[in-house]
Image (cartoon, rainbow, N blue to C red; front, side):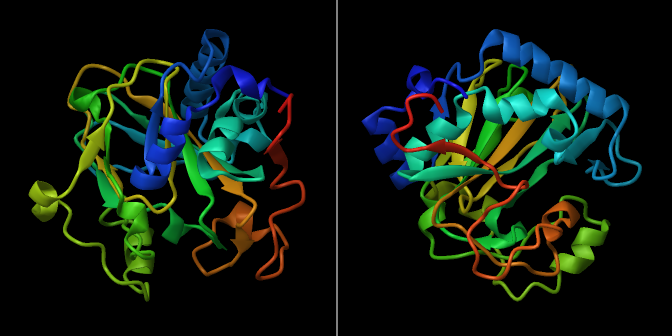
Length: 279
């Protein structure tokens, strides 16, 4: 297990996470791990798995690559959970008693990709309930507005619930599935820009952004000549309970948990506990 003391968020960052739903943690990923994850992402892109997607609409230039559940087949993605401070940082920020691995996801927006990431929350896509849901978003390349940095609507995790999921591809199967969502539509964030507090971080390789599962966020395309590779570590605290629905990702659907159950079993190992000295 990893030494949680090396990257412990400050009390000010804990308070900021509760208020804003997002914090920037510079240098969370050590250089050696950063190189492992870069190589792992490139392997995944060269040989996409069964869950891999190109989020581009058909005929659009560039490549907006995504894959998930890589930790189960690739030891370097597994190491991102077990050999970094991501779980400890999320646990401290959420004031959790323990943190479970939920799943991982790769997002790579290659040079010359105009496709934007739509405004959305993460929680409506997930078969769980609870407030202790967070993502540690790891930057593997320098990221800024020019190559598609994510924007976060500060405080939107406290807007009172979930909104209907947004399709990442306008013509994809998800667009049809999400059109049937019983949840209310997300407000028009672009039209509200002047009234919202938006956060965007310039990230160096190895930086992380930890954000709440209900915070509204989105990103522009990558028209630059620079790569934008990231790994999202999805993390769940002790108040999270299982709530399956028809849109549940296939690997999660095989978890075999009863509705209302705590996360447990080989799909959701404990990564960190409050008070651990080596976690």
